[in-house]
Length: 256
Length: 93
Image: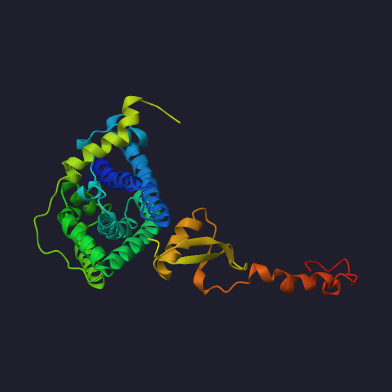
């Protein structure tokens, strides 16, 4: 039987990955390599932020069922500490150069699309509804990041070397995307959550095909980092949250 | 990035209307030009179709030739169909 605590946890995972990646993409605002990219990447970030808000709103309602009062989206985003965040380690990694940002995006988008397409058929109507809406946006995100990986890989010697380095460096954060724990298992059993083991081979096929087209090498078997979904993060998250949450922490309830 | 070519972007706002020039942007190739146009020019639901044309492929009239090209039409009022009485019932002409 799925408990509301588990459902809450599951929703936070979805929301936090969206929120953290949106914040990372926001760091590019005004620093994009060209104006067009600056705008396009910000659009992707805003899409993710919008999705995070929908997940947070639902999470708050679920929390109210067992905690006697659910937090609003602002409280969930700005007043939780790093250890309470449930995002994937991948999305909290720093932007690096543009190849790094695009490799991170490509890994995430490809996973995101596969997961959302399954959540769109969730037995929880609310999850299905949010996933169906998000899926339209994410389908475009996949197209964009895939295009960039191919263009950088199949571009100049310099761009090829940079995107290959990014693909290799970030590889160790991709295992976690398919590592199911008790929460995942409980929600899959109820037909609510996404079966990650079914998604894993599809993701690998898609990523392999794109990397081949990009003349890039698929990284080999390696140690995979885990912990983001359980609240154990890399040192990068804390610094990012310090920037993101500073205003609400220094001036609680501040509005504009 | 100055080596990226310039593209002219045309957007059709609704079914039945022609594509209209909305501006230009830089992109490495045609496919990315369409994607960039989607992000730069259709953020507020402006379009249902996008065309991208390399700016270099557009042949334009020279501003210096304005007089010989266009001014002769000014004195030929008979080209405007304003001399025919139109029946009240006929609309949209």
